[in-house]
Length: 183
Image (cartoon, rainbow, N blue to C red; front, side, top):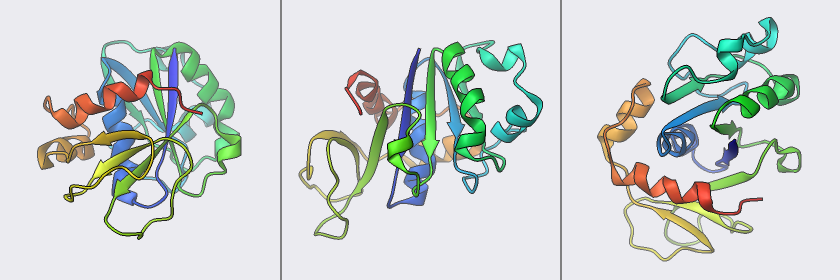
């Protein structure tokens, strides 16, 4: 079982779609949003619902291959911790979406910082490796990590609509992230 958390401090759209891209890069994955104010991902199931009602056996493991998403629904990371641990134990891969304000000292699993790649010194420097999203400028990476190509609009539209995206180099570029040592 593998679990990684994505954390994007600077970009809300990238913060919402990066966990979906990482999850779509493997055959079967669950995305769990730990942000009570997070995106309204499509679907009726929420993390708050699982916390309130308790997870069913069907929730704790995939019934088929593919991408599943649990929107938050208004529950805190502390309230969700036991349910999250049970999901991580049962799914082959889990991506946890952390809010930008999350205290990274309390991370539930290794954290993958995801940062937009802008020219100049617009963004504060990060510490350690990160995933960098190219935004149209041909720039060197400001530190160690993985560079993602610009995604096609069709891929981001599919992810935002809750459907499996078409095969794309942006999704394929996420695969290496699973093999790297994150802290």
